[in-house]
Picture 1: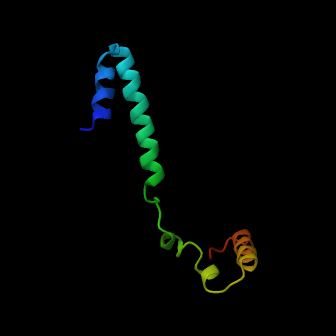
Picture 2: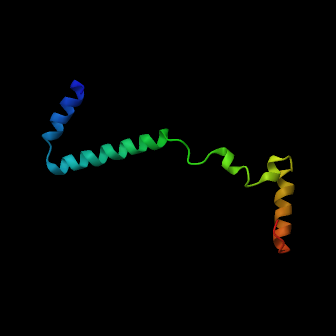
Picture 3: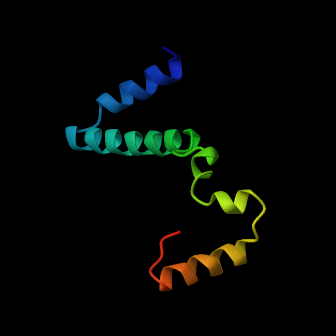
Length: 78
């Protein structure tokens, strides 16, 4: 354990129980945010491949959206 950490822990023990809880909340929130920022994304870009396969095979995006809308209005699923 580093000397700096030992000094901080000694100071923390001098706090009231309420202040110690406040310190714990602050540190746990700060660490959680830091871990989330460095965490791996929840989705891999490859997960989206099947969402719009026509877009990935060279079909113009606007044409695909227009076709999707037209098919949706006629009640025919794509």
